[in-house]
Amino acid sequence: MIDYIKAYFPDKNRILEIMKENYNLEKISYSRFDKTKNEVVLYETYKKEFENLELKITNQGAYIHNSLHHFYNKFVHDIDGNFNDFSRSAIVNSIDFLEEQIKFSPENLHLSQSLEFGLNLRLPFDLDHFILNECVLYNFCPASKLPPPNEEQVYKEFEKGNYRLKIYHKGRQQCNGENILRVEVKFLDKREFNRNGIFVLSDLEDRDNLIFLYDKLYNLVKFKLMCVDDIENRQFTSYKKNKLYKYCAHKFWSELDDDKFKIESKKVHSYFDKNNLLEHKNTLLDLMDRKFEELLDS
Image 1: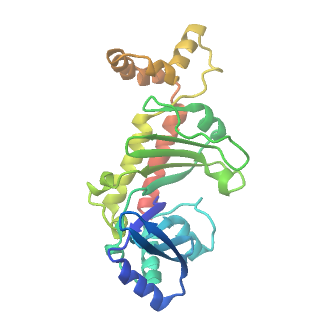
Image 2: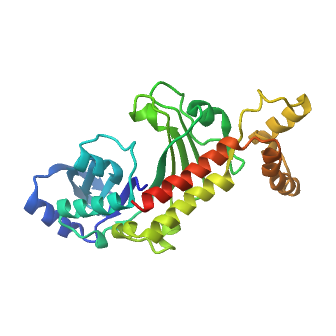
Image 3: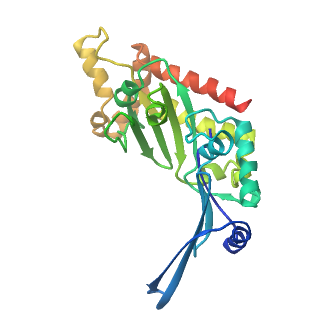
């Protein structure tokens, strides 16, 4: 569930003191002329890794960041990856383990932007085709990132507003091509989860907070992501195929005036549903629900 975290320490001097008392730190120093201060300033950065998590202390502040899921896997199972399930109990344990390592309470580690929540799902259809050809638009806009697919990566990313939705073939990335889809939301503005009472790292242990994060992911997929089953192999008339392809094209939506956009956007989902083109999306949503319920209670 929880993946990337970035959490700030309230007092960089205090955590530096704790780290120096308990660990050998990597130190990087350099000097640079500061125009605003009109003087040469010494910049010092201290680093310490805890499995994959990096604790970094700079002149400006101190924080720890990276994948909490990956940290748990390395710490507990000696697994170098995050392709498996990450249950609520494992999240609680991982935060406890981290507290033991850094000698600092998670109740005082303040979460910043870029928090990630996602699920690894085994789907009963071809993931490459689904990602590249069926996940077509997000909020009627094309993918913001679509790197060339290869043996190790089939990936698509959509970004609009304060969220980034990522959909990719996790099996190709880490599991020798196993049919595992990763669907994940990144919060680009911490206010989106702050307003639900999620402020510090320990808040991620709370059941209701995990439900809030999941609901956000689910709603983005259900209401914003346009997923349309393969059109070409259906026995549709040429007229209907053209209409369906038109609905899947950003160009069509971008050229509508506001009134026409409002009319067309209200009926497009029911039109896809009427033509039985939402089977894969409905399967995805159903598996998301089942997987989240399983992880929440384990």
